Image (cartoon, rainbow, N blue to C red; front, side, top):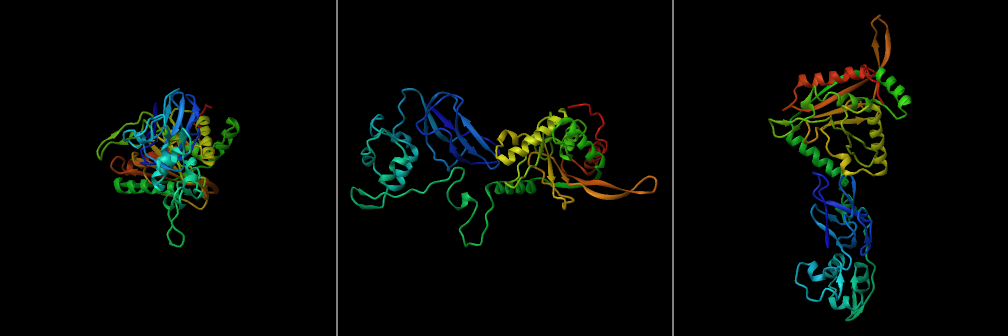
Length: 398
């Protein structure tokens, strides 16, 4: 018998939601086949069987579970399931082969006072929660059960006001969604532990926008300012190592091996920060492909935790044309966060004394002042400005 334990999917959540079982209780599964879908505050993760066996579910869809918790067992061919008493951690009161009651059914027995004698009277070798519905109270009299309907738990949502992200109607209180509550925890931690500062720089992106249109046609993948900025940021790792470092304590930080650039994505279902891997050494077309895939995953809800882990600098995108500047939160475990607002037209004076309309942005950098100072931030932003104002330099890549 193999125990199926909840793995630690991220360092942010202490509990996950069991969205649904991909295999049914009592079903024979093969190694590599999906068993269950778990949901963190940001992503969904599918667990697969590591070997062949028969699935014995110990937790219902819609319930919360913690890392390390046993949620199912895989029984080998011919192996008998544990007895109900063994599931409770006690010595078996009856032989294992007499009747097997799954953990969800055992919990229902405890909640509703259903006895083992009533369970045995069903005449089943394996008793599941659904099998006990006909035994539920209220009782009309001894031995005379009245059938009632159990409330169901929708896949992907736990029961109760706190789980649904709402509070009782009429209370006048609003409770944020589960994802937003996680955002609140990160923001609180950042403001509590990180002495941050902020620098903003004006950047002329007229040429960058033209270059992006040209590269979109050439590479046949959407290129915009975010793609150009991710590439430019990644190429600054060696020059500004502390902007990509991971703080160890208030005085030391660990150098990054590669530039892992997290980019905010929010399509209305909550913000996530997937990571573009090794952004400093990959061509622009690959970076654009990653960002396109991230936008699609945000729409489809198909992010995996591995997409969201390992970033060492963050780029926050603010695409509303009315937003001219935003101060990002420095993510715990990082030292810097960039903010990119939408381009806006600006009339500028030309060298010959005339005037022209250019597209400009305000590019911001929030930074942990223990590791990065104002001069560093200005130089970092200046290097990004140079890259955006001369976007074609050194580009002969796909």
